[in-house]
Image (tube, rainbow, N blue to C red; front, side, top):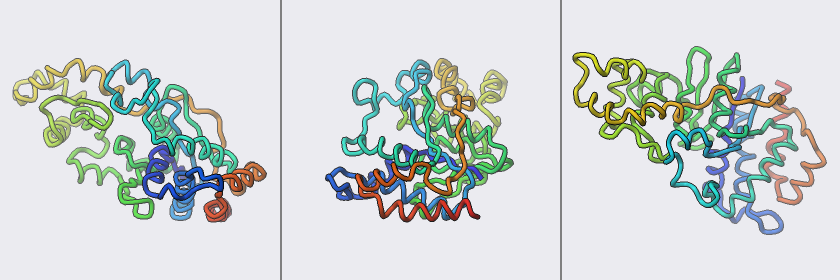
Length: 300
């Protein structure tokens, strides 16, 4: 089974869930680093993946999405088109990348793409079962019972994950299990700066997608007799948005993924570097919890 980590989602969760008083010997906060290491240990222990990828944001606000919808994540821009990120979290991200590299856990982003796009591409390419660990509902669009591909949603914590499959999506939103992207396009998402279709809220979006099956089918039927007049007018008014929004909302399936060994490592790739990092940042305890779990995963 391939496990894909939405790493930014997880380290943000760790950062806000663990006190900043958790520091390295020099006083630098390492709460996100330690939290992520423990999350990975819990996930590998509980779900026994044979392959594991920590997917990263090489570009958190890709140009192709901004060109289509300029408001995309615009409210989260700090300076120089960089993401607004807490001052005490920013220095921890390179440490996370170094620790994962020394462990031998595949971790990478792809230039011009978000972590979601790396996840989408790997999930679609993989021939077997996939589990995606995230706190981001956008990735619900990838659930596919036939594969199977499911999301382990962190809304209730890493030890109490919500399993999201097609039945969950249908029960939660009242839409076909694989229709989340179309539903989200209509509804919009203020947290990402996506306006949606004005006047069409969650219930109406769900009703329309359920009735017509997909956004394409919905738009094709908009001129037919019997189509709800109110919805027709709202869709017509939003035609410019609807022409570009699907490419923004849908995660990429074709990001250029590097040729990397995705197997769960049985032992550290660079033991000497891992010891250096553990000493510098005070990571002995979480690493001593993770390393035996990785070894057992490969042995099993």
